[in-house]
Length: 337
Image (cartoon, rainbow, N blue to C red; front, side, top):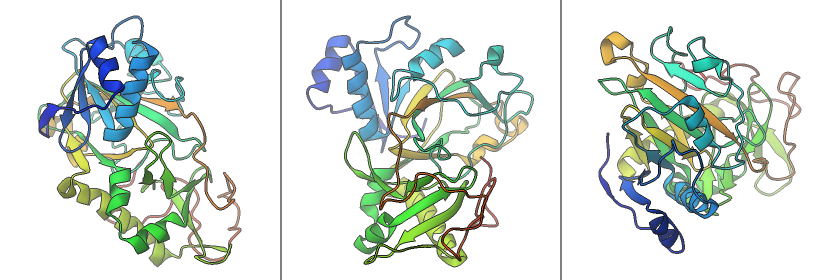
């Protein structure tokens, strides 16, 4: 596991709430935290005030890791997934034949086609960008960790926004992305509902268009191919810069790790090693869950929540690419959802 670990400083009243329940948190360096003293296999969830405290901390540090020596059942994993956000599963994926009991809420990923779906998520993204609400949280249960690495990269999107220059903050705050498969519109900069910090947002593997508002007038146009390509590269570079600047991490799992992310606070992508075949890195099997949003992630400036991406552009010239991965911003980049 990458990253230094130390005791996480927690503010009141969350500190007293967690200590009274016997929970202790250890900070990962630079983002994320490990939770000890809470067993995800318990039949009853922790008290609501404990879950509330954990959810607030997750929003601040990006993700929480629960470690276990014993495997979780799929039911235990899904039950713990419902602690967060809208407290209900929102599953939109296919079911791999190896999924335990064919459970429709388990998205089974692997580097072996017989064990799970291959090659998912190589570019920075947030889960559920095709939904108006996206997902509030997502869970990752490492059923089998590979022997030679294959983690997930996470980047804190509020810290990333803080790294932008003032003119970039202004420009990006006037942009809205259009999902390539659904036409759902999301702001590129939003206010996180818990931390109240501004956060960047863009799916580098499913964007069909980006709408720009004029800085002075209530007028809108589409970014052209050169502008959108430059924007995607800048976004990719910004999140990758977090590995050196203290807001991104490559988390390497142990078997039985259960990791939950605040999907409005951190973007993620699979580390390149995660897609290597079993004979090179060892077998990797992960189960993912996705949690219903509390409210839609609505666009700014009175833009509609959804546009018909499969009809001609309502804004004239510019990139308007429906279907699949949307706009290909880098011919050399692996693109798969």
